[in-house]
Structure formats: structure tokens, C-alpha cells
Image (cartoon, rainbow, N blue to C red; front, side, top):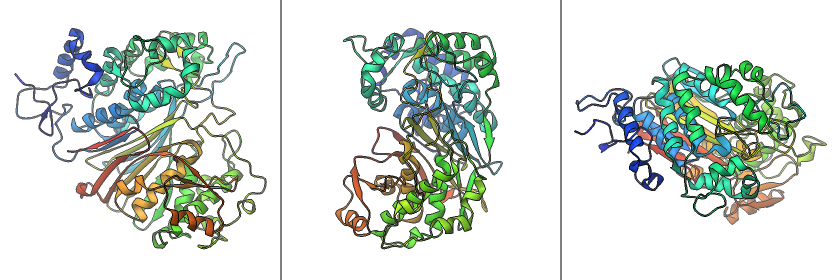
Length: 566
């Protein structure tokens, strides 16, 4: 008998989210225990031979399911399965995250934190949820590598419980199975592993999990890894929810393992942690409203100021192709120079966030702008110094057929966090936020909604440290104010100006005419291989009414995947 679990006419007799062909070099399918779990999941999902496909089963949604874009392919595929099974954007985002905790823990371990912007179509609500990995109350002298208080577990539980449709266990199970039965290291994760090979190999627990079993050294692309300790933690989360993680029998076990590893965590730190729901930073243009994450995810305000300058004083839409890189660089320079005045060294904000994007302030930021001349950065913020920023993050977007959308960025506050795994848990520890750029300054996803008719239009999230907000706005401007084809917008060469030094960076391969346009206007320019990684979805005519106008893309500069209906 064939179970009725189909996605666009293709039988999916596998656990929801399993990659199928080629996954784990076939090892999973040869394991009797895995087959037993697969059958159990199919029963739990109420698969049947009946004509009607029940909600929670792949194939429940026919036609347009929405879209997913993420930096790691397997996570995107599991998000697609969740949407196909009738899950909301919040369900899909949570499932994508927990999969990333297994397949890309360098940026998305259970030990880290992040921020999401959410639009819920049924309630017509747009919010931000902040679950950043915060500093512990105290860091003892024995903490050789101070670690943060984990935020991802409670953050994505709060998101899914408020705006999800599926059962919690359906969100966790795909990630749990990948950890228990193993998965192949993707090119995306291998790209993160390679630069830190020596540092990671020096840690026994890290090598036990990420070491190459057949040849020694660190595992690489295509190698099969099993994470049994992490699977056990995910299994507890599936059965008992996050309460056991933050305020239950598992909590002292985790705290002891963290401190034994040279981290810094207490039971009270875990108990006190709570995600924070916040209002978004809003920029209206025409009938649309762009929503950004507020501080402490400071990149949201940088992006919001840039966007306000492009749709207000700068008028990107009417600018010539040659002027647009100049305008983007000038807007970025002004936004970063302005940030120098309102963002403290400790990440605190000295002014009201809403005051930063008023029309009057935006007009002031654009004072002195000329379409034919670069404005000297030193005149904007005398004494401004470059600020080190954490480049280690990963982003994703999820949109469902109803027009609900989630855009998220998560981080370990450092590549691989502290580089250590809490023994017996499989959890990589996030670095405690602090000096040297370890923190949330570079996080800040965005959504664009038409609230008059409750339609979703655009979602984007980016990583790349100081270049993250500018790379995201480069894409948003091209897609929403320039050419509507997202594929072209996300592939287009980008520019960035961080305020100081007074230098405009452009991506290698940018047309000579555009580079000459920058230099002719007085920019000191420097070529760089890439600027940021962006995941985005654009629906020119909006959803729910016109899903055929939607495009979803993962950045070709990385190794991610974007998926929607076939």
C-alpha cells in the first residue's frame, strides 16, 4: 500500500523534511531503526490511502505553498515540506531553524540567539521577536571562554506557539532525525568549517562530532556525521518543550556541562531568559510599509534609515543606472555615520528609535547630497572610528500561501561561538556578547507589507557583518524600486560604505562604467569579492491574490537554496 503523502505528484514516503535521494550516502535507509521511525512519523502525520490528505502531511496544500530561502539547502527543503503540509510561515521558520541547528551549527546552534520580523496575515499583525543570546549575569574566573545564555530554543518556540498551525513535535522531528540518523555535510557548512580547522581540531568534543572518521582530521563536504547527543536534546524538546531546557531537569545538566567546558552559565540565567516582542521600525512608501527589527539588532535601524533615504530624499526609483550605486553608497555612509551618534559601545541606544526615521531627520541626513558628487564622510561624523562587527550569522525567510511571512537572522556571536561543545549535549556554545564585535549589531531582517489590503510583498534577511544591512538594501532597492525581477536584483553587484574609512567598496565584476561613475563623483573605491549574503522573496502584485508574481531566491554568492511550488 502507498501512503498518501505527495508533494506536487511525487510520492514522499519518507520522514517529513528528509532529503531523500543521496542523503547520507544511503546509510539512513539501510538502518532498520530509521525505517521504524519513518513509519511512526507517517502514522503520526495521519498519512493514509484515502483521497483526502490531512493537514500535517506533505501534499496537504495544493498549488502555491509559499516559499523558503535559506543559507543551507537541507533546511530549506524541510521548510518547504512544512509549508506543503499546511504549516504557517511561523511553523516553517521554526522547522528551518531547528534543522540549521543540526546542519549549520556554526551560526545556528541551540546555544545561540537571533531576531525575526513576523507578519501574521490572519491577525494582520507585524512584530519583531528578539531572542538574542545575551550575556550571563556573572562570568567567573574559571570561564576560559565566556559563553552566552542560549536564546534560540525559547525564541522559536514562542514564535511557533503564537503563529503556528502544526503540532510542536512536527516542527522538531525532522531535525531530530537528521541528528540521530546522520546527514551529509553540505557545502555551506563545509565552507564554515574550513577556515577554523586548526582551532576546532584542538577541541576533543568538537572533533568527536565533526571529525572525519575514515581519514582523520576535520570532516568536509559530503562527509556523513551523526550527532546522537544533540538528537537526545532535540528529542527532549520534542516531548517536553522548552520548559525542560530552561527550567527543568535538563537545565542543571546543561549548566554543568557548559561550565565544565570553560563557559559561563547559571541555572538562574536560564530561568530568567525570555524572548521580547517589540514593535517594528516602520518606513512607509506609497501604499507599502517596510518593517525592520529595532535595536539591539541595530542593523535594522541602519537599513531603515537607508531605505527612508532611498524612497525619500534620494529618489532611487528615478535615478539613472549609473547614479544608483552612488546613491546607495551615500545613503549607507550617512546611515553608519548617524549610527555612530546613537549606538553606544555596549549596544545601547541613546535616543528614541522612532525619532531616527522621521521625515525631518531623513531630510537632514540627506542634506548636502548631490547626484554628481561624493560628500566627504569626515564632515558627517568627525572622529568616527570603524567598529568591529560580528560577521558570523545565517539568515532565512519563510512565506506561506496566505501571505504570512517571517524573516530571521541568527548568530553565535562569533564563528562557531566559543568553538566548544558542552559535553553530553552536542550543543555548540555561543560566545558571550562583548568587545571585538561579538554581538547583535549586524542583525536586522525586513518585511514589506501593504496594510491597506493585508498583502505581503517582500521579505529579506542578510548576514555578512557590517555589510549585512547594505547588502539587503541593495537587493530591496533593485527589486522594489528598480527592476522587479528578484533573480536579477539578488545577482546584481553591490556597493557598501561603512562611514569610516571614507571608502566605497564594490563587488568584483561590477561594470566598468558603474565603477567609473563612482570615481568620477569623487569616491575612493576598492574592489572586494562579495558583500553579504541575502535571502529574499518578492511578490510584485502581492499575496494572497497574485502568487504567480512571486519569486524566492537564495544568494548565489553562497551555497543555500530557495524553494517554492514546482
